[in-house]
Image 1 (cartoon, rainbow, N blue to C red):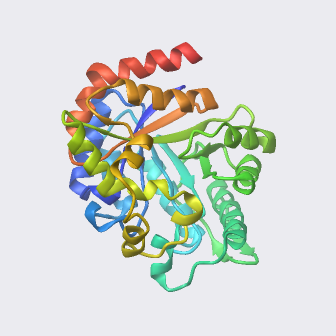
Image 2 (tube, rainbow, N blue to C red):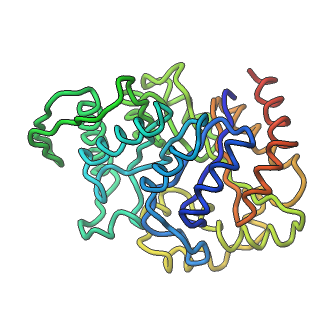
Length: 325
């Protein structure tokens, strides 16, 4: 594994907390920071959802070293791709070239809020393909006029953009998204340690390119409290993307997870004070071929988790990644 990152989860933290968390993560030695781009939290208990781009701009000026990344932005419904291109170019300048643009097809939870509906996945992939093409052409410079099946752009140009190209990643969850990422992206992003995703991405043109994963954990001194917290705030992650992409609001997610048990969540999410379950969960990503892994700490104890990473967890994960290099 080349790099270990820290995920700023907008659904569970205020914008000021997220900036403080980012500073702590950089000081703790994380290699990169990711930020979720949602309009709503997954469930009411998470309680937050500030604007990711505004927050990331503040993080860019509050940090000096770590790479920054959206994980992920959907440039298709809530945003027009021309606006995403402008946001990405601005972010890259504010961050001094430390920015990667992670893109995906989105979830109804966040995209339906602007009243444009939420099309089936086949249409969403068509939209994403057009959006990526528009974004990449605008980032390349010059004026762009574009007429597509889903988007139009008229005489658009980015007057502030970085000289160095911005890496573009695409989230993958199956063969079609892997094909799209392999053909159009500089890297792939996934939240499950599936070797098939890495393989399909490579076969579609992504061979040798980075693959980013994300691992949720709930570390703390009281395992029972950690398991309860993970159940309360992250039971939705057991639903799988085919369900998660389609539910429209927090009440639906709460209903869908009503009968899930703590033990089910704890089988997926390492909970408690021991580091071995976290290391073993990370090993699955390494074994599947992922090159980068971002850690999500569930709950409020972000500063403590960063201290843990600096003193104990980080060295153990780096030995793991070096051993598998």
